[in-house]
Image 1 (cartoon, one colour):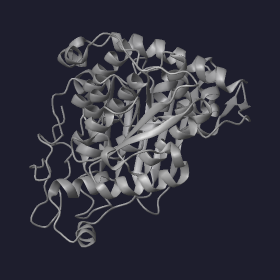
Image 2 (image 1 turned 180 degrees about the vertical axis):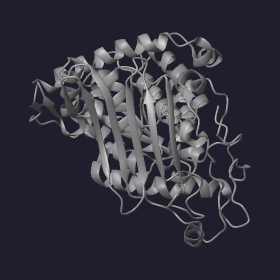
Image 3 (image 1 turned 90 degrees about the vertical axis):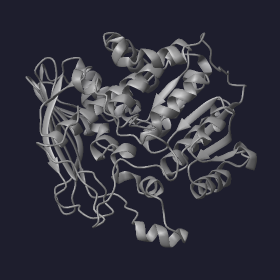
Image 4 (image 1 turned 180 degrees about the horizontal axis):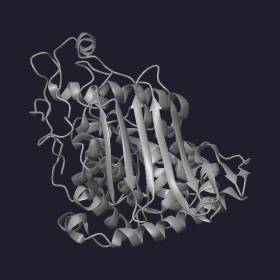
Length: 451
């Protein structure tokens, strides 16, 4: 098959169906006041293959640096230059700049005056570029995306795009404004740009396994990195404020991470939403912090098991776990009336047995290639809608496991509970604080209120 053609057709089909779904959501849920404050006459920066696109990197950690590397690698389409960088921490910015400059030479032109540090650094960097990479920890994504759209810039933002329902609504509102401004928006759910996934999903949606009855999704693995407070304070030679500690050790705090069901498992959840071309109407589940317990593991669970129900009655059974020595799987499965599919391995069994044997480009590179192609050819391109809805699906699952209740989509997405700090300063009061023993409180199913 022609990979480029398949990518383009898939994006067009997704764009139409997702927009229809979004328009059925009430203006109140999308946040009419946000739409009003961002709306201005259509605009956007467009460039053909001769024009240089200026790039800004917001969030200079590993994933941000990787995305900037891939954006700079689109130079075969036309010149790209990194001109501005921003991060809350100077050490992260310096490390990223050094690595990118060493690899890309003259395509990295970020003088000291265009390196910005602090909570408002993103605004200054956004102002200097045409295309913005948003790759801070996800809690900041809605704020940064809203500002980039307000300034009329094209965006690539990593997943998830929010950690709570108010953040999702903010992203959806900004996504509508971006569409009106003809801005191009990519989201780091790279399986949508992976040739094997595209062909497998197309076949399943065309009926290869008949009526799809049930789906399964997994991200079961080991605990990722953890940065201990005592080690950080030894490294920097000072006491860290609570804000700085939570931002340095961000994976373990909900306001900035969303728990691992949102930060990681969103990939698998998103594949099932893509397959269904829909989003769940409700969810129930269970979870807890059973094994990964300690003062540096914050407030998140180490396992979640969720049953998501779609409008047609079909179910997705979802697991994610961070426990050493257990059964591991990062995969997606579908079961139908005429067969079954292992989606992540691009295989179908049953009446229409099939296996994808083609090859495709690294999907992390492909997603940036596709975004820059859309910018240079002024093609409609907006992945923010399904990125926000899949982020919300994972948040719905977290609401179900934290509360121990069945949670409905409509109530969840309309929730006014914000888990974000009220202000962003280094000495800001935080909503989650350790007790006298240094342990952070974790949600208690049956007692915790989430909507």
